[in-house]
Image 1 (cartoon, rainbow, N blue to C red):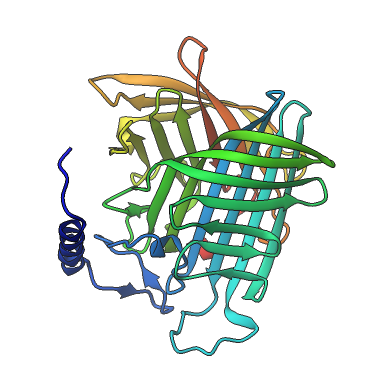
Image 2 (image 1 turned 180 degrees about the vertical axis):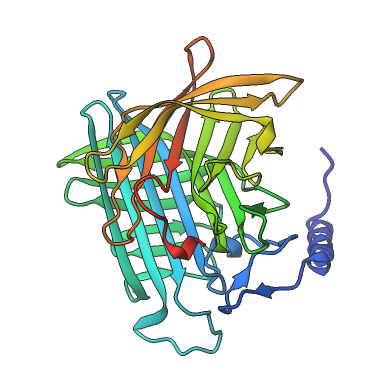
Length: 378
């Protein structure tokens, strides 16, 4: 391997960043004064793992699969949201409780062996016990925290009501990777229907899970998304179907289907392969198919969710397609929204090949089936 002096390496990196900054698009703002994601974003990590309050909505989203020492399997979700009520003002005085940011968070645990799904949501103003720092990954909502360390390792501490608590150490095995046009992920034809999309597609997880007073050591893998936006959906879109797949061969897939009111699929829908080295390969909506094999009706909201998804994806190498079945570990994995006003299905799944063999783990998100999505996403 070629070895350069550290000083030369630093100068090269600085030069590359300067060139990239020179080609970055200038900021653009919507009519409400919030910034709109633009092409050619220039990210500086670890700072950009933190908050971007000049944008209206932002989320940090972790989903994963865990196994305890007895090989009992669990799925978990931890999502931190930041929603701007008014545009961020750099000169705004800091007070004990902020007036222009809401901090929402969701936690959930799926226990397929016991057929139990527990979840909790929180909604707080930014302040002494709820924040998203701007200088790096440091999130809090009550006793729920997600904090990044200098070496890229993350620590997640969470709980669900009085049933569950956990402390997990997340070590990136790949990433971060950028989806879309160098990090700009289109969600519709409108320039404002987009996000900056940063992902760690494979995280090694280890820690402790306390379930009904019993503490278990757990290990597994997870996926982390960080999206920055001011308007995720176009006016004619009613929701999305999204999935992250971590295949046992070391590759991953991210896919989302954006649904229109007339029943058609928005052309902005996308599938992306991530190869073993972390390279991202994007495919347009006409290159893959997403077909539900059955549905599940929620006894709580009445929403009917499509399950057992047959995903027919283009092959990463060579011509043709490869079919994969995304099958839930259990049907009842609906996040019922009482505080945020949005209910959606967020579930742990496994991935099967055409012969029925399990070839990976997945998480799937299905929105817009129980009620209209919040205006904050439009």
